[in-house]
Image 1 (cartoon, rainbow, N blue to C red):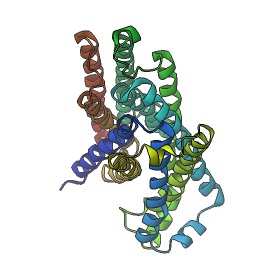
Image 2: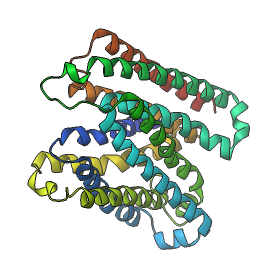
Image 3: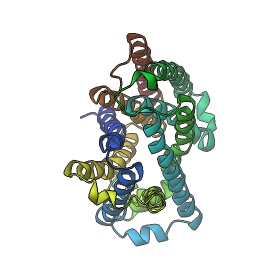
Length: 343
C-alpha cells in the first residue's frame, strides 16, 4: 500500500477516535461530568502511557536519559496544556452538545494547531506551495467555524426552554459555550506542539532500536501523563467538592463503565495514530496530519450527534446551515491533503 495513502487511512481512523471519545459525556446522564471524565482520564493514564512505551520502546530509561532536561520538561508542559484543554473540552461538550461542540472545538484547534508549529519551528515554509495551501485550508476552516457558529445560534433559539416542556436537558447559553470551545481549542493545540518539540525523544528511541511506528511512544508517555493526570486530578477535586464520588457506584450501570473504558482507550489511541499518519505522509505531513485528523473528527462527532438525537426538534434552517458548515470543514480536508503532497 502506498505510504501516503496509508497515512490518509490512519488519519481517518485517528479522527474517528477523537471525534467519538467524548461521546460518553452525553451517554451517562446519571453520572456527573466529573464521574465519566475522571474515570476516562484515569483509565487512559493507567493503561496507555507507560505500559505501551515500556513494551514498544527498547531501553526506554536510556532513551529519556539521553534527552536534554529542557526538552523533557517542555514536552511534559505541553501535555499539561493539552490536559487543561481537555477540561474545557468536556465542559464545552456539556454546554453546547456533541455535534456542535465537536465541530467548534475541532475548528478552533485546527486553526491554532496547524499553523502554530510551523510558525514557531519553520516559518520559512509558510511561503512554499505547501505552506500557502495550508494557509488556504485554515482560511476555509475559519469560514466553517463561522457557519457552524451560526447554526448553533439558530439551534439555541429553536430549543429554548419554553419549547421543551418535557424537562429534557437544555444547553448553556451559546456565547458561553463558544468561549469554552475557543479556550479548549487554543490549549488543545498543545498536543501538536508536543509532537514537534519532542522529536529528539523519538530520534533517540529510533537510535536505540525502536521501530519507526513505535518511536513516538516514548514521547507520548510524557505528554499523556501530563494530560490525563491534569484531567483526573481536576475531576477528582470536583467529585470531592460536589460529593459525587458515590454516584460512580450508586448510579453506575454496565453501559456507563463501557463508556468510561471507551473514552480511556480511544482518547490516546487517536493521537498515536495521528503521529503515525504524519510520518507516513512525508515531511510536510507532520503539519497536515493534525488538522486532517480533527476534520475527520468533526464528521464523526456530528454523525454521532445526529444519531443520538441532539438535533431533534430543530428546524430545517439550522440543520441546513450546520450541514453547510460541516461540508466547508470537510473541503478543508482535501486542501490539507494537497498541502501535504505539495510539501
